[in-house]
Image (cartoon, protein in one colour):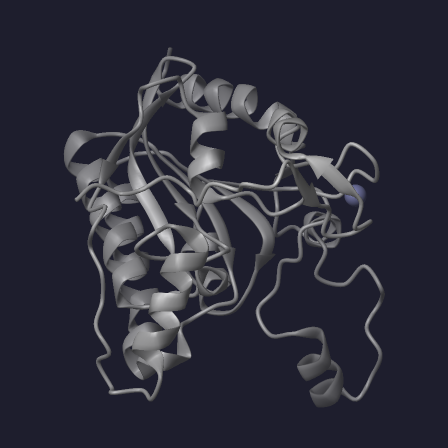
Length: 266
Ligand SMILES: [Zn+2]
């Protein structure tokens, strides 16, 4: 069985995550899920994002049905996975494959927020590591979109091991002189931030995205001091050197194609 598309929405309207105003689904897709009323960057289904970024009909998915198990017998995990599949219409928390952007061939992975907030378990780690290995063998650049609450606690230490596994695959890709651009979207946190989200040759972010490792409350408790309001925003991270550029959603496709063209020497 092939991957199904993101679950169809029967309602003609969707509520904005911020202003809670109903927006027609067609208008929302047309604006790249940016609210036309308040400008909020609503979370965007991974498959829709791939459609918006890549050349029409060029996307070919890899390892579409690769799934994990319940390696440490975590209570209720199978049920949680089942619910996540129904909610997202996807098998796992990331979609990987190859495509063309502005005529430039590349590998691409996009994490899915509707699947357990893009948490990274063994299947997510496997899919991304396999994509980098494929890209290295085929001498292709990689474009990655992160959205994640971090490692998947239901898989215990095995989820943390994905950080090292994917980082190793990224390193091999880098040593082969190949280009990796990562776009951090809201939120990118935990083990994903501490590994492949920060390993891009170029790191871009969406405006206002929350980017960090530990959460604000944890840090405030440990440090015993209040953090500035803009702490962990994309803009704050850019000011402090973690992010190279903040690129609005409507400009990303052109930006990616320009960067791919520059780095493939054309
Ligand atoms: Zn809004």
